[in-house]
Image: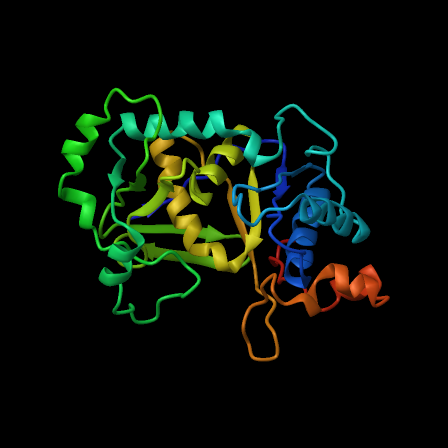
Length: 301
């Protein structure tokens, strides 16, 4: 069983990290406002980081809108792509060298292996869905490349200076419980190999995964608390393993409850009617948006 240890007390540094793949919605507004509020209450620093690694869907118009809409909500930040700061650049597409360095460290430590499975291969292996699986989460990898030819391929690429034209997966410690205390939702527990499997850290198109980019940036930017939506709780377990492999201290975690639609489904960027941009155009005021639903706070807050 793995129980995380938090970094020693340090000046509070939080972050808001929108993805410019669509207009932000009410759920983003509440989560980012919670991050802003917690940084302000701690008299700390808030970092704005633009997570634009999805080149096919990211657009400058969405990045500009995110900055404008968050400021309209009264959220401001001390560091970011528009204001600079000591850990620039604050746009992920400009931080590729850091991610490659993290990949090399994982490779050197034997934590990752190349995966040559095609999408068709994975679709076939995963045709029977796991009971209770989250359709929006990364499916549990069946382990096809974990042992077959993995050592051979690693030997072939041992002298490579880049990740190469294959996917790379992190080998999780099967059966190990990853536990952490969430500042909002309490004790959390996920079992590696059961709740989640070997996960992507690098894609064959040369792009790092969300998991790898996130932990690399949070460590480099000295983030002490990560505030985000509860849909990323399982990602936290993955990132704890990456932090351990890379020698990074875990930040504190605070996951906000999700905003749902009338059918109980969490909002997505395709729900234009709930976007901050549309609500602004309809004459809604910032305080009205933020009253829709507020994330629960700790008793000590």
